[in-house]
Each structure stands twice: as structure tokens, then as C-alpha cells.
Length: 407
Image (tube, rainbow, N blue to C red; front, side, top):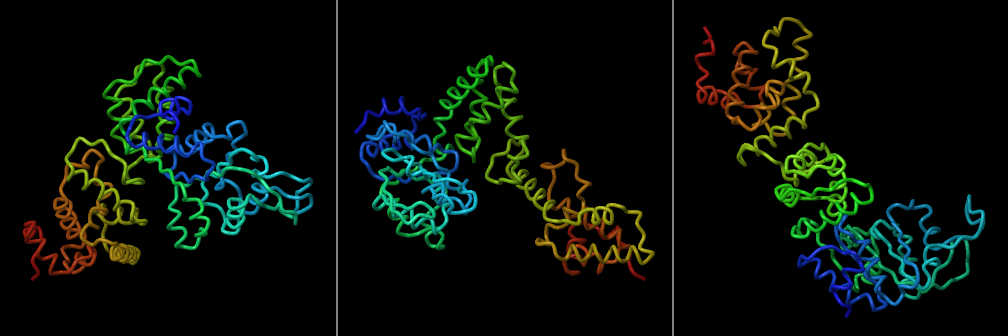
């Protein structure tokens, strides 16, 4: 077994968490042994870094390691890229060409995103893994190569096997030795080390003054979920250093960049944390309202019809619009909450988080009754509730005085 401390220093793998220590121990065990390795983990966790560490500490370190992103190669040419081709075998093949497996002879080939490989190509990959044999595209001659295969994926290969998208025999051949990289959110204690490493490397190479991160800024970074893992953290550190212009990075600077980026909005990714000054209940209301706003496509019509209290139902055009509104409301997925979208522009941004659903419901019922001249049948239909429910709500919210009694 290799020395863990020396291996970590030479490979550039960062971290002291239990998860990364286990990864380093596994690398020290499998590196000297000429065996295939499957590296799993989410995108951005550093699978390529681990693959290079295995190669660097193997008996093949004097030969090259060829890195291949299987997901980035079009299906029509992937076999030509991997195994090479013979001149004239297809349009554009003007000369004989070696593939990656030939180029990696005596060395290592790293097949990243192996789960994206076409099912037809997987058969040929299995043959290379079993006996090192392959054929160039358009050639009947069998060739030999001596390579160590390291594969990686961020997908669940077992699920792909069940769906028929990945060969079971290839999966079992690859998973002989499996090395899993934990996501950054499960190794929070390593974030400080990443920050310092990325910041120093970036500022030195770009001649930027580096005054460090304030402790509370680092705490905010540790609380973030980092769905893009180490890769996302690295890019964020570089961005904040450029925007910081040589200042010490503060908590406010970090929050501004983390939580105002549209790509990191909680609407598009509900797993991400959101900095809020209000309680959890108010935050849930905020999220519910925002989701409801996104569900409807005809909000402009509803806004005009329900917010304009001066609209009079006195011509065919208005009656047509009302029917359209009623039809849209009837098809909303959640009848008990649909009223919040009817006051879309009535809600100011600064009001979100400081209101109750029942207050919104009361106002919607009151204003809808007024719009339909206190016609309860039309009001109930418009709001997507039964007349009995509407009567109960009117009594619950004490709206009876506002309703004219029929003669």
C-alpha cells in the first residue's frame, strides 16, 4: 500500500474528511494492481483527478493516460475515435487513423461518462476489457492493445442495465473495483481547504491581490448545497475574486453572488438553500405562491379581468373573456390555492412572506363577488369551488354585509 500523505501531496487531491480519506486509501490499494476501476459520483466531484492519481501511482506511469469523454463524442463516430479507422471506410476517412485505445497502448485510458456509450459500442469495449482485442472501423484485421481501463460515470449503471441501456456483462466487468466520490455537501469540512487552494492559484496566475475570506463568508459557503460540487465551487471562487477587486471577501459579497444568480434560484432547483429573514412557514408560503405563478400561462387575461374592478359585463366581447377566464380557472391543478394567482400584480415583492393564505382567499372571494355583482353561482364557478363552500367562506370571513340580498 502506498503512503497516504505522499499520495495526496503528489496527486493534488484536497481534503481531510472521512469520505476523502477512504478514497485515498482505495487509490493506494488499487493503483499498483493492474486492474480496471469504475469511479462513480456526481458531476464535478473530481473523478478525472482520481483517475489521474491512480495512473500516476501505477506501474504504467511512464506511459500516457488518454482521457476520453464518451458523452461528448457523437454516436456516429465514437467507434472510429475509440478504435481508429481504415482509409476510405467512410466519407471523410482520407487516411488510416489510430484510435484512443492504440494511442494508450502500455498506458491507461480513462473513459469518462461511460454510461453515455451507445449499446453497440459497449460490446466492443467489453472485448477490449476481456482480451485487449479490437478492430478499426472498416478493417477486418484484429489488433491488440495493452491498456488499463478506468471508467467513470455520474449515472446509476444498475438502473441503466434494468432499462436495457447498458450491457449487464460490461457493468459486471467494470464494477470489479468501484470507487465512489462523495459530493461536496457531504464533506463540508473540506470547503475551507478548497477555498484557499483555488483562491491562491487563481490570484497568483492572474496577478490579483488576495486578502482572504472573512470567517462569516466561509460559513455561508459551507451552508450552500453546491449541486455542481467542487467544479461549481472553483468557478464561484474565481468569479467572486474578480468581482471583489482585491478586497477581502465578505459575507455580504458572497450572499449577493450566491443568491441573486438566476441559475441558482430556488424555483429552478428546490434543493438549494435560500437566505430569508422570515420563518419557515412564511418561506413555504413564498415558495407555494411562486410555484403557482409559474403554472398558469394565461395570467395576463386573468390579471385584466380580476384586477380591473371597473370592467362591466355589457357586451359579447366581455362575456367571451369571462368564459375564457372561467375555463382557465377550472383547469388549474389546485382549486384551494388558485385564488392567489388572481391577484398576481396586487402582490408586491416586499409583501411576500408577510401574509396568510386565508387573507388572500378572503380578498379574492370579496373582489370576485364584487366583479360578478354578488352573483354567488358565477363567483363559485370562477373560483373553482362549490356554492356550499362559497357560502361557508362568506360566513367564515364575515362578507355577508357586502352582499346584496335578493328581493
